[in-house]
Image (tube, rainbow, N blue to C red; front, side):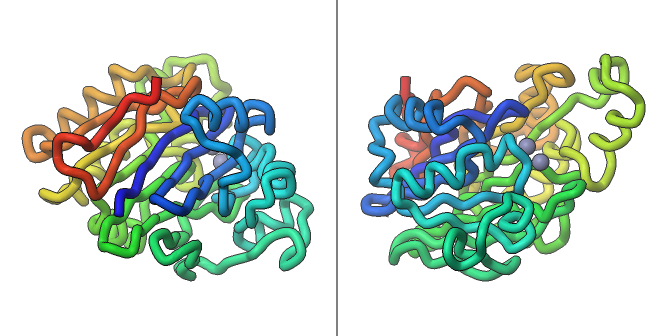
Length: 269
Ligand SMILES: [Zn+2]
Ligand SMILES: [Zn+2]
């Protein structure tokens, strides 16, 4: 059973990822307008009404913008933890199926999701580990200041990892942001730098890791070539898979788990 991971777009102006198996489709974060979400789904040939569930990692607008509207219009079940549900002004049970950290969410027999709590300022954020029921696992990890032991444990079992590489430290330090914001971004509840993302990947690297996507790159404090070179420098020849970068203006490609090694990635353009 193939597990397909498609970033519909990623960055400070919106994040959304489509996870698909043959009969199940889940949206992780719905951080664009409803119109943009439907437009981006159309670009990959997906009918919005075929979405089974939407999971919101945390309440920040770049992850939650149209989640409630989309859930109602597309008749897709909305999932979040209780804090996120409350911060979005939504009703548990009637509007949102709430979950606890590490509670496995059974979406269908071939797609389940495991939310793993991660530190992020003023938000109860989770990373998502998706599993296709045949041992293929993919991680979506954004908006955290640093990894936790629990997260590292789960990442080491994943064949696909999408992880934020938010900023290049030198670019952030010399950039236009006020000192207080620079401090927040680099703090425990901020975002991962290129170097932190590279360290995490180097630590969890294993022979079965087939694909990595760097996402949530800051347009002001980062550049794709900086993120890519930092990660390649750290993981080096030990990584034999595909490294890609998700742009704000997606979708560009899909990663496929459960296919032959030659078919790990396909263009969506
Ligand atoms: Zn974000
Ligand atoms: Zn956030």
